[in-house]
Image (tube, rainbow, N blue to C red; front, side):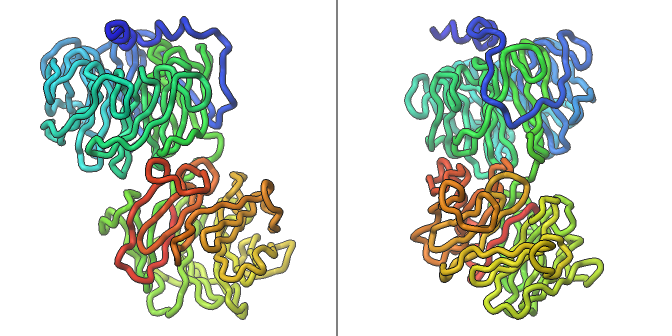
Length: 569
């Protein structure tokens, strides 16, 4: 059995094609075909068994052209840039089956050299830097290294496929730890291939012939798994490649089912696309996969010798990041790792100091796609329109008078008209006054929006989000762990299933609701902030499912009275 599977891995799609017939497809995808490049051959932009794929910080695409023993680099649209073609061999810098590929923040390129049983590192000009590994089963040796991934500390994770394990090395290639053995139990593998590491250090591994994904911490401690053999959603038949986007969502090339599947970091199914064939959006043997910072998905098809580009069918929105506000100071997690790293990695703004009792507000005031900060104080709004974190007065920044005289008024912000720009509003005792036309003045219903939603819920906190994914924000309320969300957007509570009740945050007395598009699917998810701890509903189930499925991190501890904020900093 093992030898048969080794042969299957080396020429992965021969067996796959025999299992399917033309025209087989799956449910409608939320990702659309954009373009493709590649034909069989050895010229620039041609391929022979393209396998691994990676994207650098500039959006450039790197493809491990396994059959040609080279690496090709392309621009974001697939325009050829350069090729590193050292030829077949075992000397430093040469390849015998380059398979997996990863690129770090500095542009260094890491390649698993499958038949040479090693990993090689090159700088951003493809100059050889180092190699480590040899054939064998001892620590630091390989038998068919396949997938490769890097963590934020520069550590290197490699799926040692035929040895059924994962090995971890430091940035110099020194062996650190390993985990795994052959078998179907938790933490065991049957030829693991794709691998990825998220910003929190969680390690995801494609367990190819156990037809599943496994999740571990950075020390190899098992955290969870999902998938069985099959063709339904969240089932697999010989999955191969794996990639993460900026929000922590996973993309898996489900090779035997000739498709790509997308999941949250907790394993909740999101969508799938693909079918058997050679037309646009179809596959013969999808293998390597990569996702750019703008949400474009690049899938390498080993036997169709091309790379296809897909984009989300809804406009891409960057995943919101955390922040806290206290006494005029804003601590914003610009790099999105859930930790305060100081400036310039993160942002520290002084905006609102000296205004006692000021309430922080955030929004995209200029429709730039970036979140800016602001302050509300008893009907006065001070909005940092140019995004530099400093109040410079109008017209550089924005001053509005909206909400004065409303006792107990609470500021709210949202895109009330779907134009991509954030407008302001007020919530007061169940009544909502929303500045739909964006001129900073209340002009009555018609020009603006007036809703009655939440009357009688003493102590309820207003929340805003795109609960239905239509591109316009809707309203809602949070009270002691219960969320009342106006999903249909009519400004009235219609009960379930038209609207939605969710229970998230109960038992955390004093928890503050937060909301954001954690999964970048166009729909806003919920969460709570409690004394510096963030509990985020990454799985979009409306309930706290633990860190295997949802996300927990600490940001703001020790800042008594800090107010949580979220945005695309």
